[in-house]
Image 1: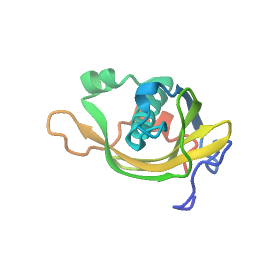
Image 2: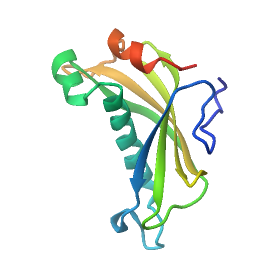
Image 3: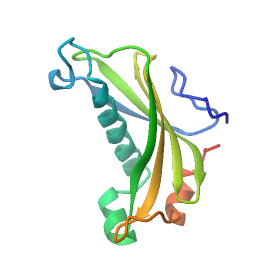
Length: 150
């Protein structure tokens, strides 16, 4: 898959499995112009990644407590194409683009009725909890999350 590939309006990213998480825009999410404040899209992305992990069978507190690992954002690049507004029903998309050692590269998007509002490439790193140093993603996680990745 090319480095520029983003989810399309249908939520597809090449052959990757795609996860969808619904979000409603609340008044507190908007700014003085009545649109979603740009930083709140990062919260939507984070919530979708948490629910994506949960849907794959991985509760983050269990990963921390039993496997001694957590995922942290290393890098994020977002492209804002159109605004969301109060009470919009949004779809937040997560798809694995690449897996390397301790790194998961994800394509994420926020859509409204199929129209892409925001796209992002997010690089998350698996780190051990005592030292917060990168470690290889544990095999059980790789087996579930890397399925369908490029």
